[in-house]
Every structure is written in structure tokens, then in C-alpha cells.
Amino acid sequence: MILKNKKVVIMGIRNKWSIAWGAAQSAYENGAQVIFTCSTMENIEKINALIEEIPGSKVFTCDASSDESIKECFEKIKNDYGKVDGILHAIAHANTEDLRNDFILTSRSGYAHACDVSAYSLVATARIAKELDMLNDGASIVAYTYFGSEKAVEGYNVMGVAKAALEASIRYLSKDLGKDGYRINGISAGPIKTLSAKGIKDFGTILDIVEEKAPLHKNVTTIEVGNATSFLFSDMSSAITGEIIHVDNGFSIVGV
Image (cartoon, rainbow, N blue to C red; front, side, top):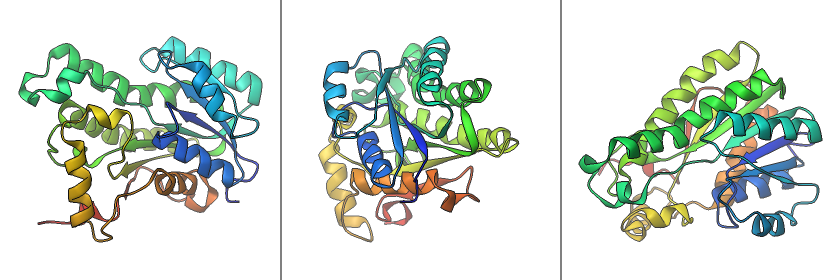
């Protein structure tokens, strides 16, 4: 129960296959009170039905591309729950054509959209949470990224660029948040079959390669990523900030 008496916000829940849902399950099983946000485009009724599995939880709508929406969402959360101990940023989006076409064909607007929603939203989240005095002492922020930020992964395209920006943002945010004793880290999760992953061309091939090449010869699960997230939320990781931790069964360390 490493999160006993802690409150965590899970931003970006979509369905039971979401990595964010694995994080929510792990946080709850480790004693946390869990609060959710979802995109204004999601089916709120279906999400409400899903989170009934976690007693005491509630979902708030939040448009990650709007500072005003993030602020309104956080104000509601603070009003209902008070300050929180952790925030998970599990938010990313790119236009389908920018994932299916060659990267060189990425439009200016598509590039800006992917970086805005997938990377800048973390900066806005951290700033607004701090401005609203929403974070308890020693609070921890976690964001999800992927190996496509480091290497050119077929079909990941502009999302790889956005995730690279996200990871750099984590390092710079760690300096600013550290002044107040807050931490921020990223988890680079191995590929998982999620709704978002369906937008990546030949995603099944990526899963096969990871299973073949990773030192542990298997693909990671949402619960395994969730457990790593719970660790980063917990006081057990109190000296870790600005890091990108790979939870991918070792695939990222393999050469050829």
C-alpha cells in the first residue's frame, strides 16, 4: 500500500484498454484515491460505467489543448477533493494522415497539433496545478512516452517528434518544479494494444519484434506500466526527478 492516503489524478482515460486504466488500477490497489479526467470528445457515460470499479472515483472533462479548460477542470477537482499528491499525464494525439503517410509529408498544422496536445499540455498541466496551489508537499507528476522519441520507428512519425519534445519538457520542468519540492518523471512504455495504437501502421509487427528481441522476450502490460507509475507517485521514489524510465522488458537497450 505504497500510496495509502494519497490522491492521484489520472488524465487521459479512454477505456479499459488504456494504459491510464492500468495506472488507475495499480494506484487504487496501492491505497490511493483516484480521480480521472477525460477528453471532451470521449463518451462520458461509458467512462463513468468503467470507473465504477474504483470506489470513490469521479471523472472530469478536460480539453488538454486549452489552458482555460485545464484550469476549470483543476479548480473543480480541488473544490471536490482538495490538494492532490500525483498527476498522470496520459494524453497524446496526432492526425491520422500524419501517422499513415511518410513523415516528410507532415503538415505544419498537423505538426503543431501533435506537439500542442501531446507535449505542451504537460507544461500547461504543471504550471496550472502549481498556480492553483493544487499540489501537496512532495507531489509527483508522471507522463507517458515511447521509444519512438529516441529512434525512428516506422509509422510513429510526428508522434515521435512530439514525444521527444515531451521528454525534453520533463527535464526542464524538473528544474522549475524542484524549487517547490515537486517531482516530474516520464515512463517510456513498451508497445501496448490500445485504441491509440490502432492508428500506427503495422503495429502488430512492432509487438512481434519486441517479443523476439527484448531481453525478457515478452510485451509489457498496462498493469506493469501502472505499477511503475505507482512507484513514481510514491515516497519510495522521492529522490527521482527529471528521468525517463523505460518499462519495456529491456527492448530499448538492445542493439541488433
